[in-house]
Amino acid sequence: MRRSKVSENSKDELITAQKEVIGILFEVIKRLHANNDLDHEYFQIITSGKKDNPRLEEIISERRKNAEITSKLLEKLET
Picture 1 (cartoon, rainbow, N blue to C red):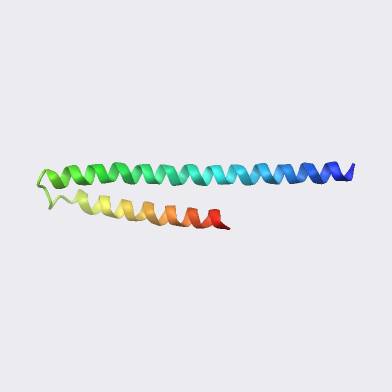
Picture 2 (tube, rainbow, N blue to C red; picture 1 turned 45 degrees about the horizontal axis):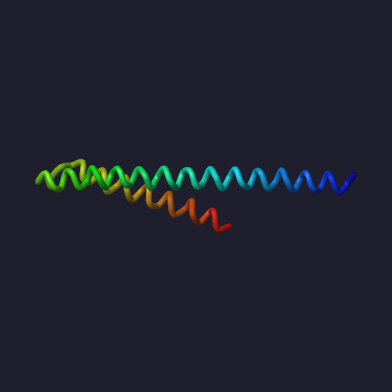
């Protein structure tokens, strides 16, 4: 009976860990996709010749924030 209880606890811990990994990977993908969209917008503005557009700084800031969060999330997966 004890072995079964330990085994079930191990399964529950494994399922919890898997859910956490899936959640982290989902967030990483979401941030990378957002950066891809921001890149597209950035290049549209640049190619239109509006290099003094204030949105460019916003895009750079958002990309940097997404990259930092993505990096932290990937570090979390290593632990």
